[in-house]
Length: 189
Image (cartoon, rainbow, N blue to C red):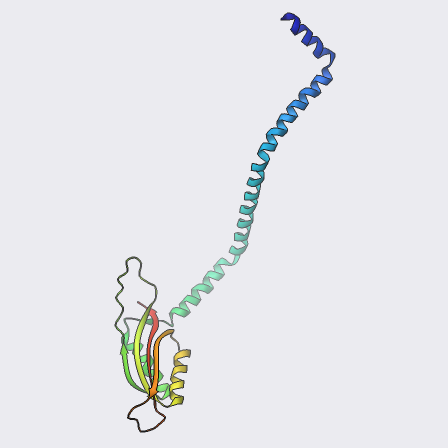
């Protein structure tokens, strides 16, 4: 055994540069192998970090005017909600149709508010609801068109459920029409 250690020591002393280069090459090959095994994982991690960084930069850029946008949206919501009717204010809601009647010259035959819908759903209540009305008006063709036009361009949002128009019975003039509408004004519960 002592002979082998002495011969190994003599061999190392005889070729130190070759043994140093061989050892260095072996260490570098092991390091290269370990690094290449982790390179795929590191590339995927780098790509994920770059995407996260880009998303954060986009959020910072988009968030610069966030306060102004929030103020604009709040003002727009206030303006839209000012056009809504209240389900509890039946007299005020009917007054809207009386105003349309006086502005267009039609004669109201019938105006009935629909009963408030009973919400049997569980969970949160809806933000907005329909306030139903059935209205019948009588007038000539121009008056009926003016009534529909005022309803379309009026301050309140509505959904027309059913409409019918017929020649008025028992009227003295031949061009008298009766318009019957079943509609819902958009409102707050």
